[in-house]
Length: 465
Image (tube, rainbow, N blue to C red; front, side, top):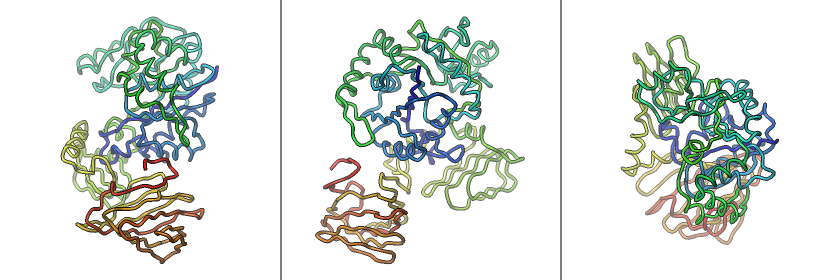
């Protein structure tokens, strides 16, 4: 029986602010190794006979998913959720979308697994159970009494697994210690293996409302470029529910297979410090970092030099537009800072200074009351939308590469050190016609410089007009 990987790529990852933000969450970042977490998740499947994949994400992140999967030649199907409805509906969308009733291997895109051989063996051990009609969940062998995870209590042996006795919510530290001492409990990983048809049968039995909404959402879906857009009205009518609550806690066929493979969900900066390489003083350094008389700390910078003197047990994160310093024992509250920024309308909760777009990226390097300066990078073949602005004019200066420019009624090429001026209200667009990056400086001037001052007349990436 073939395996279809179902990659859950939603979520905001606010506990890893300021690196992870709403518009660019942790699953699309390179936090542990050179690949992004999404790419690492897909590459982890190399030892298994995976015939297809379905990645599920939200509308805003669709181009991250497509670009990163295309980079590793593993595009597969990409289903767009018009709204978040938790894991039970998301898996149902995948189950309804596949053909020939494969085994669905459900994985989160933002987990780290350091021992991929052990991961492969655990999945292989679970395959006969799933083929026989069991719904397999993977239980992480715990190494400490962690209060941030849910737990699974195992029951009687089932071939290479165990029946699930019960699922337990995040416990107190006292209960967690009892769980560890008993040897009968695993951390709940949120990873699963089961037949597509078996999952749908159990979902229809226990949550027919979710089943019907997702069935209709897929039946009325449409293909858009690399993406499957499910019917918005039907999916919005679906109740938000986790797969644990909707199915796994109710079914009589739940089985747990143990997984001891260096797993982490990277739920905080301290958990990333736990799995990172460290020097003899227990420090993990990333980027241009110099430390002195410092111990047990995690220091990361995206660019500028960061120096640390006489510190201990700190997390220091520096991006182009924000610096966060926290005691390593307080990093569970980082999401509260992101929430505070959101509530106070600070853009740093959502956007980086460098913003990715389907055609490339831009970096807002300076701004004032009536001006803004951006460094724009356009990928080979990338094309900005045909657009105009009601409140700002723009100056484009090509730094490297060749740009094909439409400025009003004229279309022409701009090369290095050449420029053009686009007045307020003039229709314009830009395209990189070469096979290497196009770099330019854009100077905006006007009474309003927000990103919502864009009137689109045409867009090759299907963004709203």
